[in-house]
Image (cartoon, rainbow, N blue to C red; front, side, top):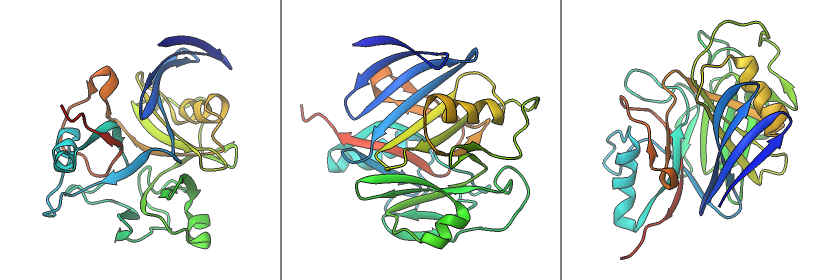
Length: 247
């Protein structure tokens, strides 16, 4: 059932899709797609390589890898920045195995626009941490991906975001609730600035911490709406896994 809502100047259209709820949202004349995951009940994972060590890179490849176990994706999007060989730029953990260490120092590009952060998936919860807090707390993540910059830090926008910026891209990111029960993923359907994107997470999605995942190459998969954005190979992918029909 589709419903219309107005929240803090945002207009939403939502559909319940089993494992994950996705919504079309307009905020300050910019269009977004929002997908909210109940982390206590849903199977939220990160994907990079298959069992042979080969890059997955596409939503279709993830579905092919899941099929032998009777699983499939309900939702997915790209989950962090990567090098030319699609290896993660920053910290990356998959099935409790660290594949890339934490990068805490400043650097070039958006990733190095400190503070950056880590998205950590644990049993029954998910959290966005500012990187130095992540290092200090050392949570035991089953899955983790580092990206940057942070969009929202303890309820405040990243201090280097400019309200009058002219740098606009399709962008995607993730925010989490204080109790870790909600992971809210967003992808812009219009070109937006960091300031606009951060305000979405702070003012509408009500996530006290939120992390930029990437821009320009941002893509999303949603089974319920038959959306599967295509393009060149991605690096890390985050997705909600569900049981595939048996008939």
